[in-house]
Image (cartoon, rainbow, N blue to C red; front, side, top):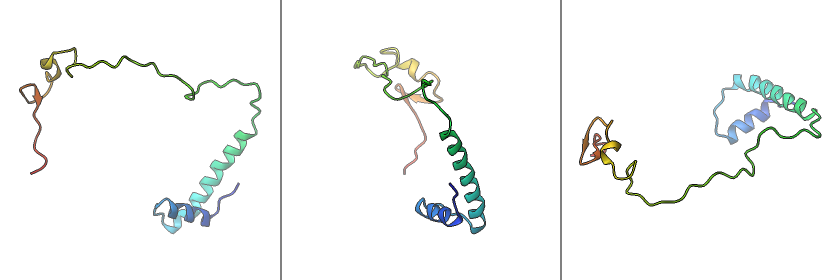
Length: 99
């Protein structure tokens, strides 16, 4: 499948991508090359070949939903802020960003 300059212009417009006129023809050639590779992949016989990996229908392990006091290690606020450059009453102190 070949992509022409007008198709690239239309897709760029729909995607709100500003492309200079001199880039449209090279982009059309690059996209046509990519689609050619995809067409080659469609010709490969995969009958009887099992998928190597898939993220479809994979169940993720669930953890128990436990309410804690919010501190790592359960009640150790000093450990949470130990590496902070500045703290106050177990809170991080950061510069004001809104006046």
